[in-house]
Image 1 (cartoon, rainbow, N blue to C red):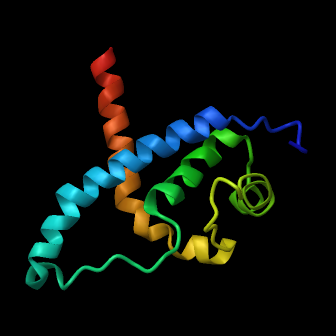
Image 2 (cartoon, rainbow, N blue to C red):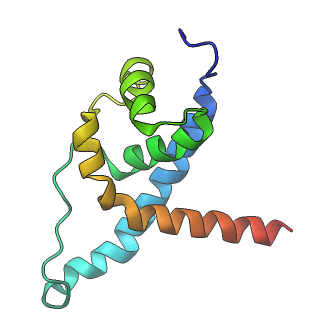
Image 3 (cartoon, one colour):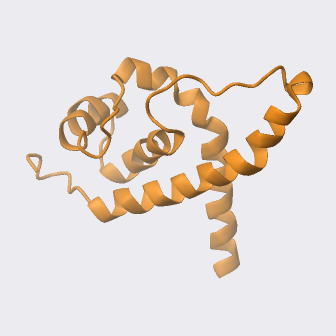
Length: 123
């Protein structure tokens, strides 16, 4: 790695992705399948067209907070595009990535809620 100030933790990235992917699969099966069943109530929900999965987008957003970068744009354009492109082969441009962030807002909320609940149970 070129930037010695930022230590890349592959295990952390993979752990975040696995947790995010498991949650996205659970949401897909439990919540959105019910929305798709009753299109009259929800106006025919359709997933937005995006090459990256919701779990990949969530992983990058969460990993940013562990990265030590203070600017998300710099993190994405410099670090993700250069150092993590092999982990995310369908990486979006920065502008497109910011456009699809709203697609994972519910996923991120549920993810945070689940993690908070788990931490309270451990106390």
